[in-house]
Length: 112
Image (cartoon, rainbow, N blue to C red):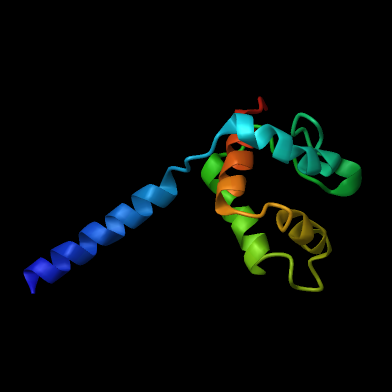
């Protein structure tokens, strides 16, 4: 019983550790950011007129979580969330988890 518990705990720790540290590549993420920049600004400064927040310097893990939430319909699927509904299709342009991690790495490299 103790062995099973130890294995389960080790598996969970491994799972959380690997997802906590994204293996994104900022150089690969830079061209992917072009779509994001249309609303969030070329340097991630945000655009108040579009209600697009500043992204520059945002933590990589946070960007990954939010993009995955948009893709999964956790965010941006409620009709009362107008701005989220605008963002959801943009997140869909990132075809893979690697693309999400790469663009998140690029965003986190932008200076606030």
